[in-house]
Image (cartoon, rainbow, N blue to C red; front, top):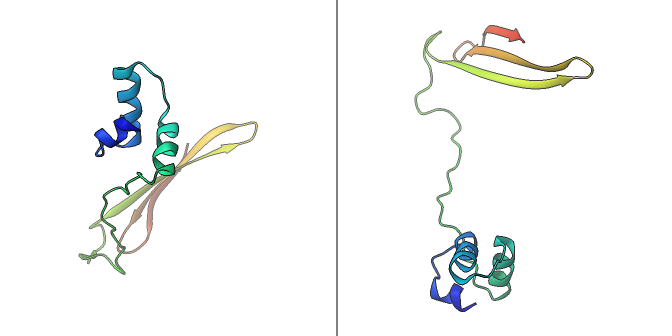
Length: 101
């Protein structure tokens, strides 16, 4: 507890490492988190919330200006793993290529 109060900027993972490495006592990250949470010392992470737009700021205006690709892996029982590769034109939404391997 004293270590957490001495280093308030450290997250539970770093505190667990510090206690294990510097003090010679093993403690897991989850245990450090539970102790900090029990004493109301868990700080919320600093992050910025980004919301999605209704449409792209610079949408495509012509065919072949932007392509999208996707790889999907799936398992067929008694045959093995396969993947499906597709290339799609962003403007026309036309599938330019698809391949099953």
